[in-house]
Length: 160
Image (cartoon, rainbow, N blue to C red; front, top):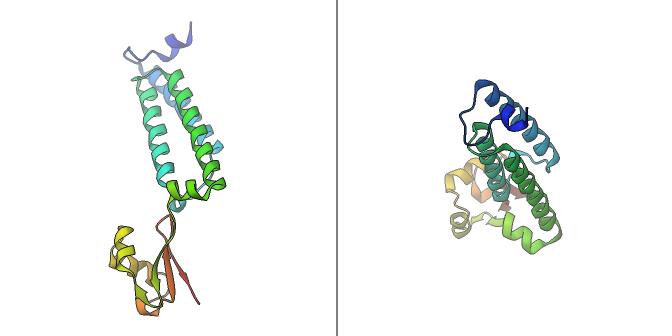
């Protein structure tokens, strides 16, 4: 009995057992793959991280449901994982590339004055900014010496 008979192929109806075995394989594979990839908190997720996570998840779902052969899908996910690591290494070594894929911090407040253009460019509303500032102990924008919208969307306040 070969692996195709055990797991089913992409063109056949899968039995409950075949789907269950695929689920186990995909779960173990995804767990190992994501443990090998760089660790990041959800707050540190970049656009590239999100895109690659969605691509890997979408690909694995196709293998799970039998819409694509499991072997090539797992291989493609390994390639995507390697691409993720490569892009991360490039971003660490090149400021230009890092700014391209991750963005750069934007100074949104200086000496208590809000830069509305920066706020607009960051697609952030004034109320969202005010909320984030209150969470850091600032009741009013005028009380903030300097603040940045960081690459991950967080607000950093520098006390001068």
